[in-house]
Image 1 (spheres, rainbow, N blue to C red):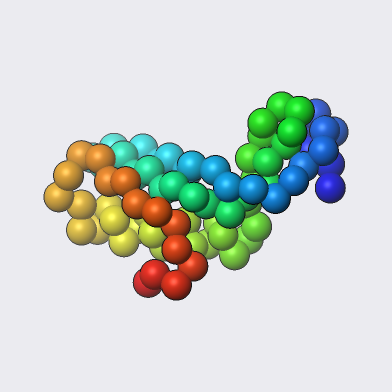
Image 2: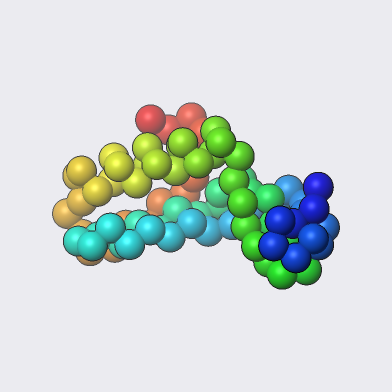
Length: 77
């Protein structure tokens, strides 16, 4: 697979996803990703993107802190 930004080689790996939700910043570690070896561009499968949205939504609904740091888990609800 090639990077849509620079046409470099993209490999499966892991990354950290950050979302600034205004009242809370969410950091999700160990996210399955596709990472470009040339420019570092990160992309996610549709399934992972949906899971990230769920995690962020769940955390911001119950956020009692300004920063939430969690590890990505396919099994967590």
